[in-house]
Image 1 (cartoon, rainbow, N blue to C red):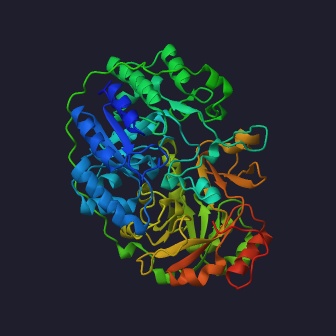
Image 2 (spheres, rainbow, N blue to C red):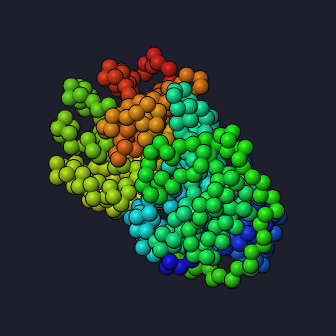
Image 3 (cartoon, rainbow, N blue to C red):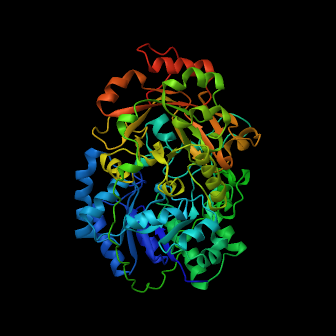
Length: 587
């Protein structure tokens, strides 16, 4: 074991904070009454935060404050006031941040405060580390989907590495789920998730989106040997007894330098589980065994752990890591396309690929044609190579890296000069290409837009969680989805196989049907990942004049399961003032 990792416990309330400290947590994470991804927890008001800061300092326990939501422009004044209060009166060890614009602001206004990259930032690759270091992060909370080899590769970069080891996990990548936002107007990126993944759906498997809780207690030695700095227990919505009991088990295992026994795993399951636990992501066994619900049997077999925790020894004083200065990027106009050259329609094909005949009819209408990386070299697209942009897979794991690099190199050799990217590490993979920032960057404020501009992106797509009227005068071309089913979830597990079996082919298409009969298309992609799309297409083409006034120069037509006749119809609507004759939504 390289070094015993720190144990990080959740504190969704003052009582849970005390339970975590008593059970031996080295660090705790908690949120205030706003700007955190568990807004429905029994969070801390300002007076309670001051008391919590004092309690943690007296106990030599690190304190991390969650600011891990997207921030709208109108909120920046309030959030700066809040951070000023935290810095002066609470004195946390670090802030956990998702929003790139907020990162920029903190580094400029509060350079002495340590910041940790939230799992909501979708950190899937060791290639992210250099970008995070340059922005002044002292630690990264990795995506829950990562296997051991990817965790080890990230830890080897030298940036402090934190991973989740216990608790609930989402079927969608964190920070990449819009399902609750779009269908229920409760944004997971704003701490309001209604958990549609836990609901029943029609079909033989009534809960095809519900994953078991994660438990990595039987892998602690491997995790420590990989160089992980901090082990995180999920559970800010859980009761203090749960927090204390789970924390005490992991405390004992770390102190004794061992993995959990069979009896200890059973004990953890009796505290809380959903049809048992899963370690599927960690060991790269991704399949149906990962799915489960909180059954009646789970409830009947659960045990009371009230009063079962003995107070742990006082933890030794720890030094805070030095906060590195931020080195912000500078835009290189020679590597970008000017906004004046990027106006009109983007034809984007994420599901069924268009025929050569449709391309001959419609390609002249397009400013750009977006196609998944694996398909961009298809011969039907080569006559339009100057307009082609390769959509890079949202997450690229270590075992996929070389094959993705090979596909990018092949595309370059055939003359493809543009790529549509959704992560900072894609900038490294696509060096030498003109880059377009995708919707997964979650651009909802001008600060985030300004930072991405300086990474020399040619265009940036505004988040579907905005109305598209975000800014004017951008150095980038601004892009927005004018038509298309909003992508709701991106999953590493194959939902199609979990519902009704899968053909194991690229762009395998199925659907998820909810209790109301609404059908959500699911499309299989790179490495058998899935994207779940909204049941109705979003339609904003009748707002094109307003969007143009706001600076949006590119309107994306996102095609998934449409027939070619429907594609022709949509393209015609985009260039006319006619009204659509089909059902649609504004989200």
